[in-house]
Every structure is written in structure tokens, then in C-alpha cells.
Image (tube, rainbow, N blue to C red; front, side, top):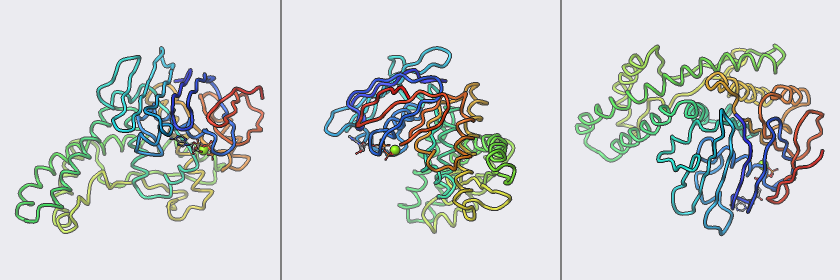
Length: 362
Ligand SMILES: Nc1ncnc2c1ncn2[C@@H]1O[C@H](COP(=O)(O)OP(=O)(O)OP(=O)(O)O)[C@@H](O)[C@H]1O
Ligand SMILES: [Mg+2]
């Protein structure tokens, strides 16, 4: 999968941009606050339909403008044009090859990308939300049914939580909750089952990547924490049982305390939990191993590498790891942003300056 070109109209600090990208390494060099991350954001927006920095479309529109537009031309067994129109006060609209899509899910899978920035350290260090988001973003890109199941699950969950917050009679709750439990367990089981398959593949890829990065010194292991099972049916029954067991607790605390919305990925290095006990460097390398594993899992699922976006990550790595990374990504179309670039690797360089991008001749 490759991006051929991208056009931005009124997107963040770009009033008008049109550039074509090379199929290899594209290096965007520029000082701080020139628009490097803004471009990376616009590209990733076309993969998942939302920004990785904000939930408000308004933030993405050049100040005082009425709309913004992103056009991405992608090559993947033929050409695909993705157009996203953003408005300050209404929902975005998306066209694929000129045809409007009716549901957000229809965007997913048309263009796949993996995004990596120093911020991704939160994937290792922060609360389980971040690790669930990681799984959800990837799984939604592979499987639209996952995306729809997740939206449905969140809707049912918020209904169940609303009930727990507003209904004061325990008898009423005991009567109504089982209906929601059943729906939650059924939808949740597909989510858990997909995540288990995902982690099962990811763990092998990640272990291999980490073995290379750490020169065989560290063994990376991943496991899913939550209800597990061999089939959707088995997981459904287990989730239902858990929901029933925790009903009293849920009523007391007034929210749903168990289910895939509470699950996590446990990440260990030499059997030590990296989230709590890993050094800064170990956490960083683990994030990198997961991102590289993500590329491989995409390739395994889709038969082609996704586009890789490396936003400002070089400055965070030591020399050896920088070279290893640049070496590793040779066959993958990459958009790399940085403030300086002095590596002798084949690449196309661009200068980013105040919302304008020009190709430079090294
Ligand atoms: N909606 C908007 N309209 C106009 N300008 C915006 C908007 N949103 C953000 N900006 C501006 O875009 C500029 C560039 O932001 P960006 O995050 O892309 O910088 P960068 O090149 O990645 O810098 P750094 O090297 O510091 O990461 C910022 O100065 C910011 O004020
Ligand atoms: Mg930036």
C-alpha cells in the first residue's frame, strides 16, 4: 500500500498544499511548529477517520475558515481517492473515489497506516485504555465487523451504566440488568475473541523484533488480561457469568465493572512488568518493538505493508537503534518527520516551513 499524493485545503496551518510522495522513505525536515505533525495527522486521519490528537474536527480547520479538506490518493491494487471534508459545526463527510460513504466503518480498510511518535510511550506506561485503543485501532482497520461490534458494545455499555446511575430501586435493577448483560456478553465476546487472536499473532512478531533490538538480551512477552476462551460461544458464557457475579458490585459502584472495556495487555521483559518496572529505555524499545510488530501483523492480515508514519521518533533513539530502524523500514513507504536528518540512506527529502512543503535536493 502506497500513498501517491496528498492535498490539503485549510487543514491546520496548511491553506493549500499538494505534494506527491515517493514509494520509499520520505523525510520531512523542519523546525518546530512548521506543520510536520499536522501533515502526519492528516494522513493518519484518512486511515482511521479521526485525529490522533483531538476529537474535535473544528481544531483541524485553519483558524477562521469554514471547512477543511484532505485528499489522499492511494495505490493498492489500483488507485483509490479518499476525500475528507471537515466542518466546524457538523459531522465530517467522506468520499471514496467520489462516492460518499454512509457509515464511518466504510472508510476503514481503504488505506492502512501505522503511526509512531514519542507519545506512543504512553502505550507502555499509561492506563489500560491506551493498550485497548491500540488493539481497537488495528483490529478496526482489519475487520469492519470489529469496528461495528465495538460501537455497538459501547452503546450497550453506556445504556447499562445509565441504568445503574439513574435507577434507584435494586429490585428494578435486578429485573432489567439481565437483558443488558446478555447483549453485552454477546457483543463483547466477538471483541474479546478478535483481540485474543490479534495478541496471539502480535506476541510472536513483537518477541522477534525485540530480540533484534535488544541483541538477544531481553525476552518480550505479551498476554491478554481479562476473560479468555477458545471460541466466541465459550467467551460469551464466561462474560455473562462475570457480569452476573459482579451485579452487586456494579449496583454499589453504579457502573459496569467487568468486560472487555476493562481488559488490558500485560507486557513483560524477562518476566518483569515493563509498565511498572521497565527503565525509560526499555519502555521506549518495547514501544518500538510493538510498532514494528504492528507492521508485520498488517502484512500478514492484508498481504501488503501499511504506510508507516514516524513522527519525530529518531531523536528519541540511540545511534544504533536509529540505524537499525532505518534499515528495517527499507521496503515500506515511510513518512518520517524530524528537525535534522544526516543519514546516508536512500530517501526523498522535503522542507516543511510555515505550512509550505518543498522538495529539496539533499
Ligand atoms: N487549526 C489550526 N489553524 C492554524 N494553525 C494551526 C491550527 N492548529 C495548529 N496550528 C499550528 O500549526 C503549527 C504547526 O504544528 P505542528 O504540530 O505540525 O508542528 P511540527 O512541525 O510538528 O513541530 P514540532 O517539531 O515542534 O513537533 C503550530 O504552530 C500550531 O499553532
Ligand atoms: Mg511535531
